[in-house]
Image (cartoon, rainbow, N blue to C red; front, side):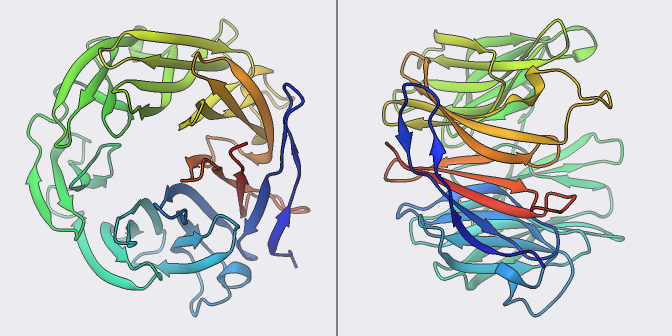
Length: 384
């Protein structure tokens, strides 16, 4: 039987001999569980979404068994405030958490079974009680697939309907009650979305990756080209995370490909006109998620791809992740271990900033003696 509960760990900052006490909290049950998206409320509550196969441990209050979509809300000290599970299919997952000013939370239940898929908006109160549920879209007729693009507007969620051959049928905007508002005309005329932020987007089109500025309704204004697309639409660099900054500029992080086929870190910052403020390439590993801090930026790093293939000829399933902090000029001034976690190809590793400047990182982890990444670890790192 695996133990569940909260455990505190001291993490060492590797540069400048700086130290900060981080707290790590583990959630899950005896089944496989995953939480890989984060949202933070204005009062510091942390909302995580994913799925669960457990009905014990953190999920002991469940009355059903089997896989369900899962939403977990905790405070900054790791205390569980509420846990919510629901399903409509056999392979369900919760995604896309958004915290609203009134304390409520909206999520999308992505349900899948033998008959097709559904996307349902669920609005939960501050206490985790269902306020409203509405199926926004489902497969059937000409709609063979329904996807959630990276795009999210101030007004609600965007869903993409696709034909059997993956040709787009429609991009539709749904409000926070799950009601269709309008179809987005010409949404993809500037290319395919690569990375998305509140007020910026990077799209791939016509052989380049281009940074655009967005207004609240999704109208795009071209700023600058930020990467090239190689032969056969292959990328030699990629931005996996993009954030909008208070000065109207943006910052992005990801990877660049080496001659050996390994991925090294890439981080760039642009001003409001699209001028490059700085660009850094890093030997420490692929940069996966990025947030703004009081004195610069912070990112999480997956370092495994810098050291080559394992003995089986493939990249390892997981490795110890790191958190790095950078100053306003993009120079790393601290590195901090986050412990072993699943690789970005198996599960997301999410990062968010709390109102007090603390940072929250959620990872899927492998308990001692187990073969799979079946638990969730939330690490909260103080601002200083």
